[in-house]
Image 1 (cartoon, rainbow, N blue to C red):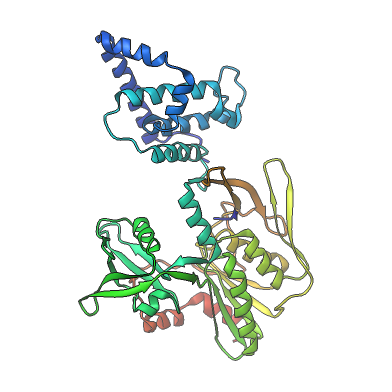
Image 2 (image 1 turned 135 degrees about the vertical axis):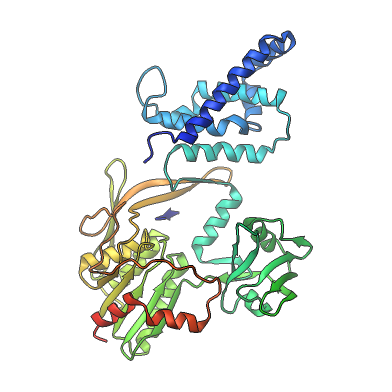
Length: 454
């Protein structure tokens, strides 16, 4: 899966943590010196079979290995060994690393007081590798996490059709969005409802991911207990999970000839929703189009390229380059679904795949970019599935707009630049009246309408 979502020095906190580890190790050695039995035990442990240690290490290496592997990965660029040459990723499977992991595992097996979760130990080990890359987009996924992430990019998933959010201070889990025609809507769940329980499972002590997993694990019809503030009622709703399609595209006509399309993100389902929305607008007489990408965090490279193929004349959409300079070009073919005037709305949260969209429109000169400087994420990540079903994601390429602009860290400069709006505290639930008032005061939308002659 291709996704479009440098710190060379340790932070003071990291340095402090490493110092504490070194101090603890030093203290432990001193304590052992005065205890003949323990000294003998340690010598016995260290003389154990190496391969027995490796086997134990795969189950119980959490306590030290996460930080240790971060240090190892940081050594990739500095050599990390006596040769002074860069050893690359091979340091992770080198003899010295395996021996040290074996030693740590044996010590944990012999002396660690608490219980150890073998699955969590293993996952934490690989999370340490991802963290050590110093790539803010790198991440290790367990099999369950990877499946969930893949479902998110498909745009269709198994669930109740509601977006949930959690207040980190109170722990309350609320329904933030209810999808149209979803099981949640049919059961009567409303935006703003506080979720209390799923069957016999109490949500009050769960984090958001646990609550979502609990709902998805239900088979057949089940009861969802919620509290509705509007009526000060505790309600029990009968609901059943099913296949839900996420809505990523919203459209409407702003006037007789100007259509409006908001794209929330670029999932696999977005391509079909874009084409359906564009067709509906054209059937209603649309001759000019405003595309709203404000707040769009990006998504899949393939999806945005399919959409651009429908809008651009024949030519280059975007190209990528890897660390070896290998270039891959994504091009549009002849034949546009829509060739009328366009304006594209962007802001500081327009990122990644959404910037590819805006950059291609701007470089081809077929539309006007309106708003504020975009986020500036010109990097491509790929997610690789590992042999046990888990996965790892990291940055693999830079991307460039058709005219060769690398916007990473700088963003796209709009053709019509507006002042960045100061954010005001927003209510979780917005009425249609409040939303209508905000649209009236939407400077970017007004500017786009003026550009298109409205």
